[in-house]
Length: 119
Image 1: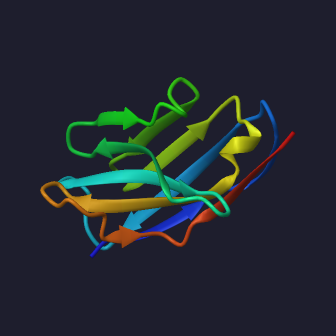
Image 2 (image 1 turned 180 degrees about the vertical axis):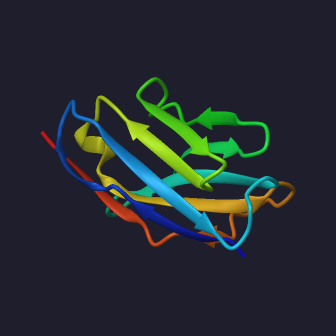
Image 3 (image 1 turned 30 degrees about the vertical axis):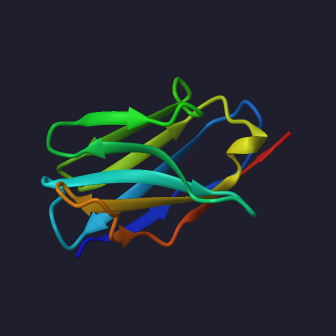
């Protein structure tokens, strides 16, 4: 099982930027798909984007495309989420999660980090 720990959340004004980090341990991620999710109060959890670790193939939700960027540092087993042009509706708890390359469900989750965007 992969252990994941997020960091980097905080309070930012609309239009600002934040960078979240996700540190993975327990296994190398070469065969995994790793993703960022978020959940706002009273709303369902939403997929923000994913990266297929070995190939670096990245996909984004339409709501963040062009504003958020996922990257990774394979040597450090770290994943990042650079968030620019933040909007109040981006306010949520952000989670990183991992699944095996052939699994359908994300089985490993971090504890989450709060991002609050003020208007």
